[in-house]
Length: 181
Figure 1 (tube, rainbow, N blue to C red):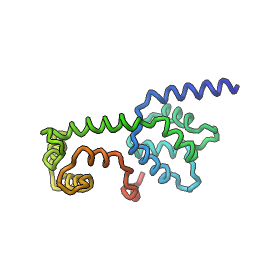
Figure 2: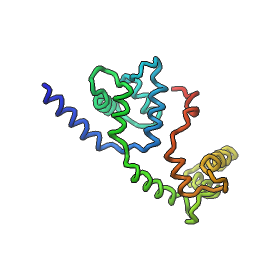
Figure 3: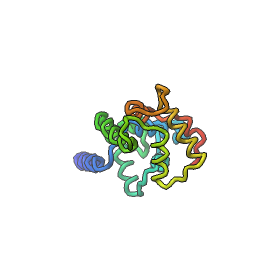
Figure 4: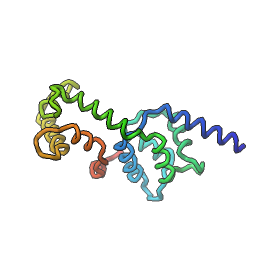
């Protein structure tokens, strides 16, 4: 019986490696969601609460995947995922930090169309328009907000280090305080 349980657990870990890896920002965001969905503050989530975490992160996870992931995370098999199990579960998916930075450098190049080494207001606007967004006053304000948030040296544009820093930093929990699900 114990050997079968160990084999099942190994199989689940092998399947976990088939899923995309989580970035540092993803993990920080998931920590925030754990606390948000732990309504009774008992530091554990049931399967339905875990589904809400996935939903909040805009992950498309079917019922079979939820069952599999819940089984993987619930290592003591008590029907709940406590905070320690949750953190251990997230570490299974943790992306290598150097690979993460390399991918962010590639993403930066996608935005930096003129290859100036900076992302400016015009490039962000062009990106939004290429994704089918009308460039309204609302979008302009959002682009201004993004630039201001990421532009740590105040030069009006985002260099590659500012881009990586803002992409890796912990999400602002205040963004979720009014969330309704």
